[in-house]
Amino acid sequence: MKISIIGAGEIGEHLASLFSSEKRDVILMDSDSDIVSRISSSYDLMAIRGNATSISDLQNAQVADADLVIAVTNVDEVNMLACMISKRLGAKKTIARIRNLEYSDKNSPVSPQEIGVDVVISPETSIASDIFQLVKRAAARDVATLAEGRLQLLGLRINPDSPIANNTLVNFANSVSDYDFRIVAIQRGVRTLIPNGESKLMKNDNIFALLETRNVNDFIKRIGYKRNSIRNIMIAGGGIVGKNVLDLIMNDTEHWDVKLIDPDKVRCLEIASKYKRPLVLHGSSNDPNLLASEGIMDMDVFISVTEDEESNIVNCLLAKHLGVKKTIALVSKPTYIPLSQTIGLDSAVNMKLSTAIKIHQYVLKGDIYSVSTLYGLSAELLELGVHEKSKFLGKPIRKLSLPKGCVIGAIIRNNEIEIATGDSVILAEDHLFVFSFSDDIDSVTEYFK
Image 1 (spheres, rainbow, N blue to C red):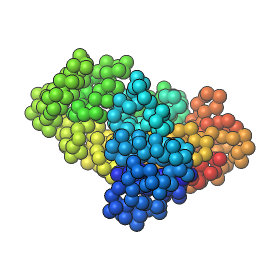
Image 2: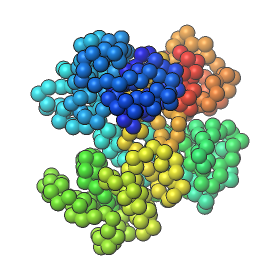
Image 3: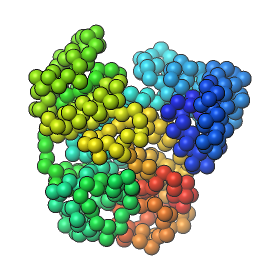
Image 4: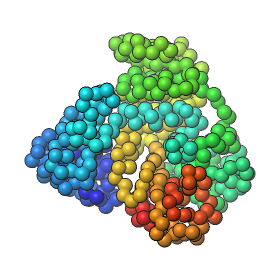
């Protein structure tokens, strides 16, 4: 696959690094010659200097022959124009990062597709959805919803007093006779491990479990978490992300009591006029006296999504110190995510990483129906289709020579879900949920092709 990336900001560079490691044919273009020089010497790809709205520069970026053009500059209009020109020049598919939701609104007089944008990626919408899923599943540090909501991939921490600490996976699995689940990975410190039955679960491990949604609450309870009903939520930050999170919370069937704090008076009045139920507070989320007077100690969830990364981290640490059960911080550096739990945060999310993950699923080759990534893990959960001529049909999983770093977690057959075990047999037309390290995706998709 030939990919042209327009814009070498943090998203563009992250995608370039990812695609380069996957040995794809990548050309990256940016207007900053220093950035172009640094990227050329850092990654195995072609980086050129150019203007995203110049026809000749886009031709130099070989968009006419590209299977995919990804425009991720910081300006919506530039991204849309780059996609429009690329499409006219012959690009097969285009993706644009667009922050202004007016352009993708269903009531807009002009749709992005009409001007040559095949796929719109909105960073604020993506990250708000990730945060909302963490709120819905309060005990989880990470969560990905699969198979139209029937499967979940949960990231959970094993607390020191957890009943499964120092237990092997096989013993834990034997103690749960009501349903099947599959622990596809264990994060221990900064290392990610692919476990087997004899792997021991240690305190402070983060485990990633694949199971049916209907069994999630019981599974969380067996890990040692008490079921806490979420009632009170406080959001620090009323910017685009904060408003998107609030929209999702207000439109959900659950009834939550929500407070939102923001230092911008105009923004507060705008949010307060839109909704009657949430309490909108004008003030600084960095003010511990304000937080205390507004009952932060009574909050079940505290979400900090201000524009200041350090404030988000400090706010959540303060909230955790004051007894808030669940804290979620928006951070700007993806490298902070693996360290977030070490310093005391429950969950950290990153807008650039979330956006890159959404874009990545349009690039993966083979019969891939979906891809999910959890924060802090350089791994993916792929939904793959099985052909009738596949070499492993009719064989139990335990007899397959699977690629390194690969685990089959679940099978969907005739719309029925089966959590995979060593005795599970793969048949034609199955959909497989396969956990794989990012670096091994090509070998995994080639194996299952």
